[in-house]
Image 1 (cartoon, protein in one colour):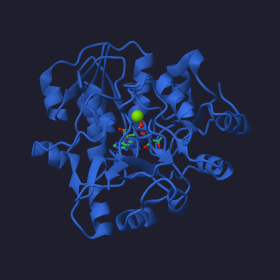
Image 2 (cartoon, helix red, strand yellow):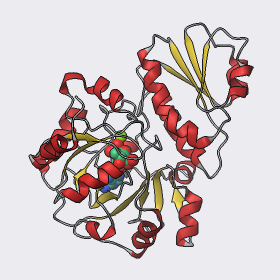
Image 3 (cartoon, protein in one colour):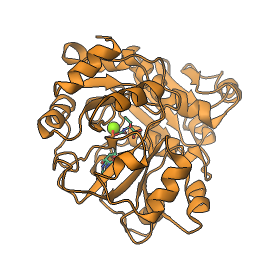
Image 4 (cartoon, helix red, strand yellow):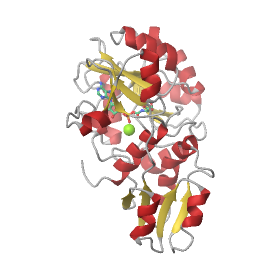
Length: 327
Ligand code: TXA
Ligand code: MG
């Protein structure tokens, strides 16, 4: 149920769970220094124990007890925190093994959402918090989606409207020789390279060269899936040519212009942005997938964006995985 700040805080202090808003997606939070509290996250989500969770802290200095802060971490935190960037760093012993899935690294992020920050400032511990969805379901961008997905098992939820960004943070591994993006997000490769004045690697590069690092188990292929069956198209043109757009099926497109091009088909068409603005697409993608699941569509058609060094990479990553059939 929806709860007050103080009820959520009491739950967290007592070693229980609370759902809190961040600027990316809602998070399922627990005391990140107490393994029994963190275990409750894994149980409720049905999350495999080999998938580590991110520790949320209010700033770089607050992260020093938990991770070895490198020069690159200082530079990136200075530029992008608070915000949607998670740094993978070598962990310190105080971090419980289940937070990091027994890896030597810990993911650290300082979220910018004001309510979340107020909670961090009032607590004496960092918050472990994955996205507040059962494993393999779509990440939530509203409190209503969280309540719907967890039903009567749902811990107290602190509502703060729709999340500002709508896609999870960029995850960058700073422990490898060359910093490597394991999950694309709002903070782009180009922005990070400019900031560090050096080349970084991306999962995409590694995929192409066959060197995909299986370092982030949560970034296995299948993820973010709506319940409704999905179908992936390479482009709007190939979607139109497929001639597979039937009545009772939904097509998600990126602008009203694209909606007009699908008028002749019997399918339902929703646009994720009036004018094709990427930030709006990012904000409404998960919301639309959740909404589609509440209606009785037989299929959801998703279309890849033309990729550039921008949010298109993160959006394509999420829709590709929403359409993946297996890990
Ligand atoms: O925006 C976000 O990052 C949201 C909000 C709530 O902060 N959180 C989130 O957490 O998306 P989660 O658990 O749903 O995704 C975190 C990803 C997972 O793919 C996980 O495998 C990876 O980060 N990760 C976390 N710690 C890691 C570690 N030590 N090594 C490798 N991958 C790690
Ligand atoms: Mg998640």
